[in-house]
Length: 250
Ligand SMILES: O=C[C@H](O)COP(=O)(O)O
Image 1 (spheres, rainbow, N blue to C red):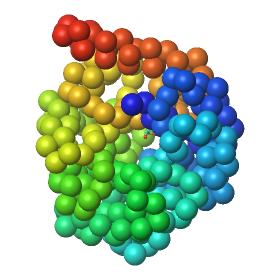
Image 2 (cartoon, rainbow, N blue to C red):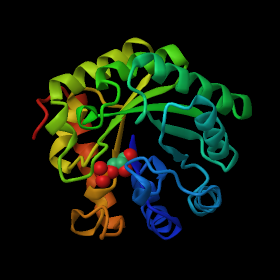
Image 3 (tube, helix red, strand yellow):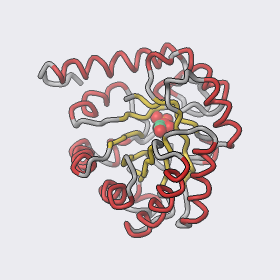
Image 4 (cartoon, helix red, strand yellow):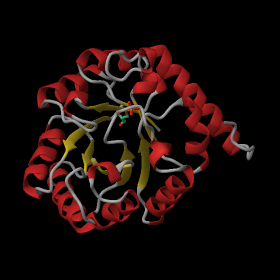
């Protein structure tokens, strides 16, 4: 699945123009961090702006180790219409802290909407911010009852997912997530030329912003529907080749 992250209602409308090429519209506020949370009314407006058959995801933020605070924020996101709730475990330094936060989020979200999916996100560049190790995230997701384990990059400085977590380690991440029946989502300045590896290792959800913004610039550029279409076409090409048993082209 392809998850695209607009930064507000205008860009969500651009996503709506490319709706047939994407699977999930992910609401965030990039100026508040890699998984920065947007306002509840923006989540609501975006929910109304994108076709009803496209799920809306919302990030709850690069969160501290404060299970109560984060559970309440997650409830805000699901009440506002998001059905994928993503939590960036920024302030969790141990797996137990990650599990505490995610258990509280799962309860808050599922009591409101049992069908909503909860995503536990770690950071590929965890070593730069001192948070929990990327390969601990699938177990955090499993033990807390979250539905998916994700990696993104915390510092958007041009370094990318594979700069911090090489493909063979990402493959292990996916294997661990799948072993406990979770979805595996990968993001972090992913580009089209990463799609061969991401497909080969069985990634369920690829998250992007920069690669579908004009000039590849996630801050100054805006999401372009034709770039979303091109990215999707490349994803589909790799998927077809994988299904046909051909070696994935780079
Ligand atoms: O969840 C996906 C992120 O927004 C990825 O953004 P990026 O591709 O600019 O790193």
